[in-house]
Image (cartoon, rainbow over all chains, first blue to last red; front, side, top):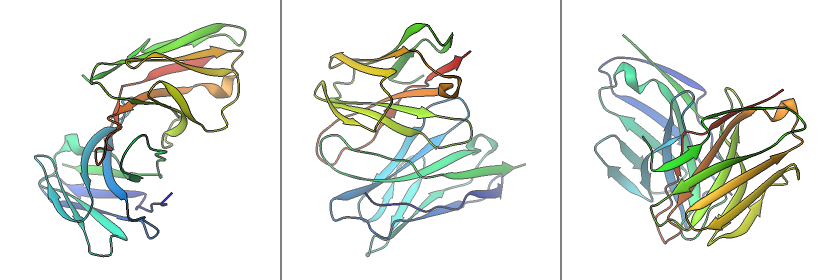
Length: 111
Length: 114
């Protein structure tokens, strides 16, 4: 299983773009990268999934370089409601997954 | 609101009690998971069911007993718990198909063992 490393915490002002980078040096060929957001006392919420290059949805963008050893979650123009813990996970496609969470990044958005 | 429903939202139980946590999803997902989350820590995987069969048990103590009665339901039976078992218990499901690995979580059951 690929181990992930993220910054423990980040601060950002409202309206700024936030980039959170995750390192996953031993990612396997059939592994996908997913990101989750978690608010206190709620379950994690799936944000975005990618395999390579760039993926964008209505919430975020995910940038994955060619070697796939890292990925960057980009949140455009954050608001106070984006204050949460963000987890990067790596898991193989297909069937069930032994998905384990790293420590995550606590993003604090400042007014 | 989430598509994975967990009941109850809160549970207080004594160390000699027997209780059950329930999880339900109607997305047609074939994999279901139990996670345990302590305060300010990431979720820890406990069990995984795939097509209603227990596929992963992360060396969880036998006082936690999972059950998957059908593809939509997942239970966690609790017996003789310890105060250190107090935590947020999260259920999740995933499609189980190729290239679709997103986990869908419920909002958890906050368990307090007294």
